[in-house]
Image (cartoon, rainbow, N blue to C red):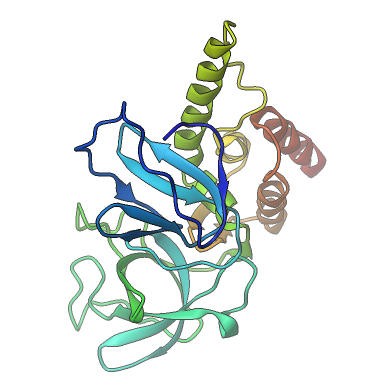
Length: 275
């Protein structure tokens, strides 16, 4: 399968791998695709096909607003109520409200070194940064507020104070670093196309973004806390409401900008902020 940009729609079947690729290589199927044994891949989400040959991963990249729970995703959820053993949480998507969001369960003891006496006491309206530990289409997702590898919080847990706003799912993935992988694929594709034309390719980076320039520039000039959920929600907290609003506006306005344009946007916003 080539690295050329290809757009597919739900219901379409992906072509089989080309002969020059390793036939015995097992690819991990990511979001947007359904694997039907033995080797058929059906598209279930419209978007752009991406293949990472090094990590043997294939997925569909899109910027939709409806989030579908996927295992190991870091998300921002809101506590709706508590039962004997679980917190019932809402997982809102992008610009959706809590009332229209899908639900998930967060065990009372799904926190680092939590016991019945030491576990966090969450209430209706509490916001948590959690990892999806179990995702199945036949049941509500299960959450946990610690890193599965280290067993430590690693940033997961209750998010106190701050402000939450929505972005597209594609923008959320870029802020979490997925765009770096996609960008490398684009560079490889353009280099291959240039070689076919007998031309030299130079990666200037002008027309492509690593996805995190806006955060890098903001972090160099402002003091704030940030959590990005793959469900299209961002939590930001600072001691100054003006800083919080500045961070929100810069992130929301940078989605379709190049890396250079993102940095310029932040510089102008900070200048207007008077810092």
